[in-house]
Length: 240
Image (cartoon, rainbow, N blue to C red; front, side, top):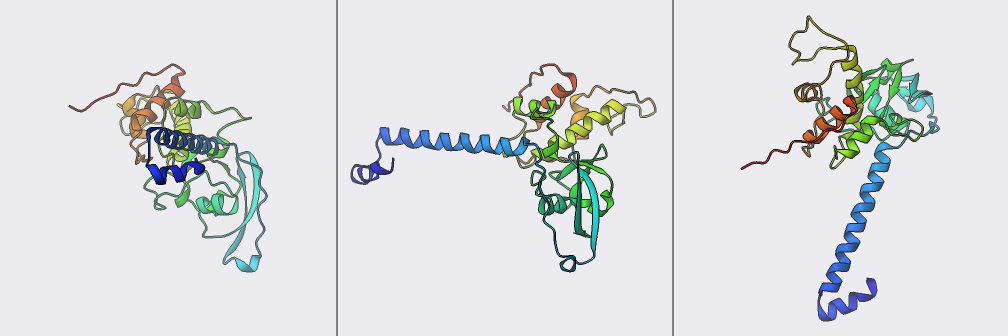
């Protein structure tokens, strides 16, 4: 294409040039999408944590956390959040910093089986606990059923909120299996195990995870399919 720039300058853009440009642009978008999905769903690597000089950290504290089935010992500021510790000290950048105020859910991770907002969780409080991030959801190069369902139903667009969405959805399956009640539970006094989630239940339980692209119908369908193991057909609503 570069060798044809002189021709374009001299005679203008013709149909052949336009088709080549569109093909190159489409290939670039596809490559970026594939690379983004690979990063999003990748397994966590056993990365070495760079040691810091204790004197360089104010209120330094050494904590040991089991992250994605690997024990990590790291020196941190006692006021450091779990989010910043995962991203800045452990190199696990799959967990995203969205609002940093606990309002968007992009930073959701799973701590001892419970979903938490890592931007509001002090890393020091996770001493001896088990933390699972998006990098640890897949096992042995095999996607978690929730990840596979998100891919199938296109449960993400820009993908920024997706790590938090998936971690929240995986923990949600545990909540449903244990029969935990939600705001839309008909009778909280008569809870039962293995709750089958309705669309309303999924929407309410996932309400803390915001998708600014608006992929909510796809996310609900993915979660329902991951729980039931059956194909879920989306019902599209059109305005007008």
